[in-house]
Length: 389
Length: 134
Image (cartoon, rainbow over all chains, first blue to last red; front, top):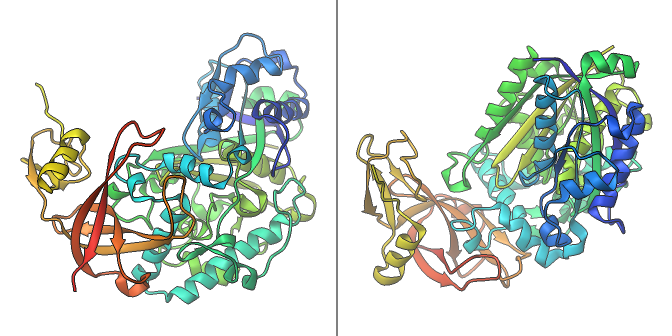
């Protein structure tokens, strides 16, 4: 396989948008195309993550519409759906097509306009990510799934719930600290532990500030062969490893504090890159809920199982930590336009490795990883990037 | 070879007509699979029989849903129960008070109620309930 590199990135502000999904994607894509210093018509294929366009805007087959809107020639344009990991699996496929030698220049990304649905309908629609026959009929929700994980984590590792809730709150505080330095974030503001613990209960033990918001937004990345990338830019960001894994419904997962799809995906990515978790400087990972960040840091191998919550207390995932987790503000503060999230994580890693993140820049970062999770722990995708200069 | 799956239709009929919960038992490794799959969840064997599950189990974890999705009302308890035969099942735990961590490990029995179709469900559903032993 050929070496692949990211040569251009673009991202909209996350939040509530008046633009349509296609318009948001176009904004991100044109920024990425300009950043890559290529022409629109150089692009040979489009890989687009979008989850619920059908429900948000009555729009299926969004990829060809997005392709046409930015003037791409009659190239293949494909929509990827892997719930909240849709953008990430679009990125992974884009990378593989370039790695295979079939395409030289592609664009990948994602777009989502969650805000059109309103909370009650959105909670119904997001519930479609659960097993529609064996989970949804019990009225399970997304926060509910991670609430099940939080209670199990407390019980399994014998961490009293009040202490775990404090540790979870510290995840939210950290990510909002980072997010306050990201002008593209949905909620660029700092919060305190008391804000989290005093917020409305959503699904015991998760409170409002344990949860990421429903957001609108889009992000896009141009990938080329590394060889071509070196001619286009002084700062090509190399893809050095990737992996993807799947799980069935929650009931079929042995232990939902250990997401086996993630273990498999991460292992694959580290093996391809020839590195270990200790080599990762920064990681944009799937903190859809505070407990989600804690269990992700364990399955990715940054901390042993049962130690992820203590690592937060010790600041090991903060700005001076052993691995800086979610320097963008994460899904928690930056926002979670589900189909775009994996692409937005990629945007942050590329910008960080290029040293373009201003106030939230992690100094000296050379290797970064994305981690995106979709559905009820169903799909996980990991991609590892490295400075290519 | 034609394989008879434990279809959702069959499972639902058995619940509605006979108040019985069916699962699959592997003829090769004897593992019990629930919810049903096309193959044994342990060894992938396609040789299995349908068995009646005991309907007994233990609470592994739980939550109280405070913000319900469209189609559900009020606040209610969702749990994951490990069934006597091994597999997990998602349930609505029926309790007088909202539970705390002490509910984990408690035993009880599975019950059933049928939910009507909604615009997206493509048909009725069985909702599994859980009643704690005294």
